[in-house]
Length: 112
Image 1 (cartoon, rainbow, N blue to C red):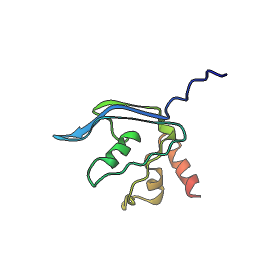
Image 2 (spheres, helix red, strand yellow):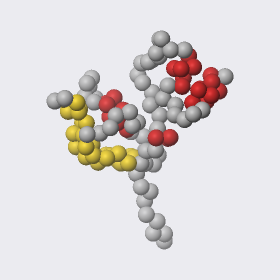
Image 3 (cartoon, helix red, strand yellow):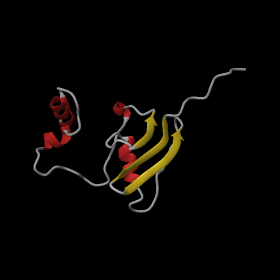
Image 4 (cartoon, rainbow, N blue to C red):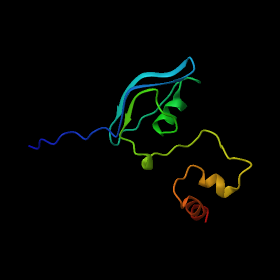
C-alpha cells in the first residue's frame, strides 16, 4: 500500500481581505481549489465577485491575507465586457498587459 500524500491545492486563499476607503469588499476569505476541481463564483451585483477575480489574477493586491498556488504566467483574466482602448491601435490593444522587451513582436505574431 502506497503512503502517497494528497496533491497540494492548486489555489489556496487564506484570510483574504480587500477594500477601498470605508468599503470592505472581501474580509477573512478562506478557500482552496484542488487540482482538476471546477469552482463557480456566484453572487449578487456588487458583492465582490469581479474584485475576487482581480485579486486572484494579480490585478489588485489584497489588504490582508495570502493567495498561493497560482503563477502569474498561468493565470488568465477575461473581462465581462470588451475593454478596447478606442484611441489605441489594434497592435497596442493586443500588446496591453504583455511584459518584456518583445511584447510588441509577440502581439504582432498573435495578430498574424
